[in-house]
Amino acid sequence: MSDRVLLEVCIDSVESALAAQAGGADRVELCSALFEGGLTPSAGLLEIVRDRVKIAVAAMIRPRGGDFCYSAEEFAVMECDLVMAKELGADVVVLGLLNPDGTVDAERTARLIEIARPLPVTFHRAFDMASDPFEALETLIDLGVERLLTSGQEKSAVEGMDLIAELVQKAGDRIIIMPGGGVTERNLQKILKVTRAREIHGSASGTKESRMTFRNPRVFMGGQVGPPEYSIKVAKEDRVRTFRSLAG
Image 1 (cartoon, one colour):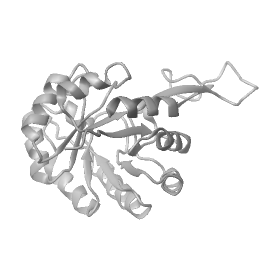
Image 2 (tube, helix red, strand yellow; image 1 turned 90 degrees about the vertical axis):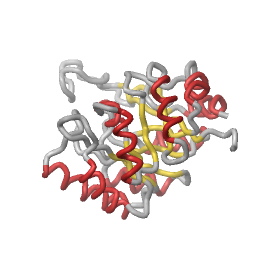
Image 3 (tube, rainbow, N blue to C red; image 1 turned 180 degrees about the vertical axis):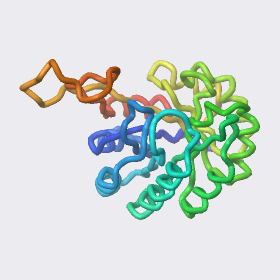
Image 4 (tube, rainbow, N blue to C red; image 1 turned 120 degrees about the vertical axis):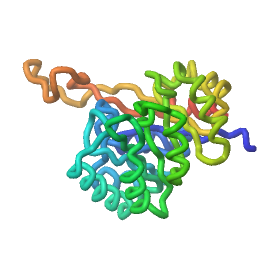
């Protein structure tokens, strides 16, 4: 087995895609609204990112923030978005659906996998809200999902390392287990050592100041709780390069 660990960087802009590629990432997970945990990127964003980078692009298919139990209308949106992602050149699709009882929504996940083929499918951190991680793992394997992104059902992958290690062991070569959530320069190697994972996911991000010189301090365009209005979160090439070096 190669010592090289595959590095996926979570992004929501063309600038971040270019920084991830320049820093040595193997793949980007393209989303919008990372403050919401990542939603489906717009057609424009996906098309331009696919045009500008040569590394693999994994497209998020998630119609809204909040939980992962979707209505019929939301599921219809996911079906349409998945078709769009394929048409615009996504290399991987990323999705996750749960039933009200916390089990994997196997029926509708199977439908999305069918639409996605021949593209590989990653089941995202909806898994971390599943009621039984080992039952969920076997369901995903039975469905033919290629990859599972997980923080080990904790706030961060470093806190969930023990469960991730168990998942890696139980999965064997049946599905790829990719730790993600709170991955930093300080904990990346520890996560890989404990879990023995062969892929890892992080944002490697920082902030940059807005180019606006005029700023109205009385107005905020988001909700009551949100990121600063005049700073932008982007992937940083130097951080990606450090992640790449640490991952081997």
